Length: 86
Image 1 (cartoon, rainbow, N blue to C red):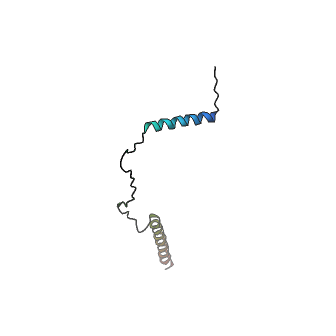
Image 2 (cartoon, rainbow, N blue to C red):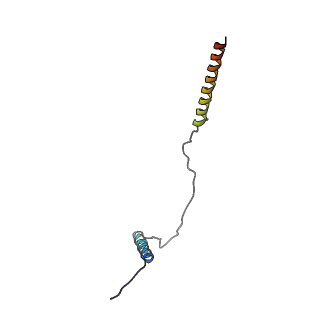
């Protein structure tokens, strides 16, 4: 009787090796027997639609609205003081 005892690390290594062998068996490398083998890897520019960016960001627009509202409030208070002072 033959007893084989693998440690956990050896078992994982053996299983990963088996999985890699299965993947390699799925794909077969094909090289031509005659002629030239060439690989062309040329990068080319790809044109896409231009992305239009707003001139003002949303945050800037919100800040401007807040500032305008604050100025309006100050004007109303000044108008109220003038009318009550007279």
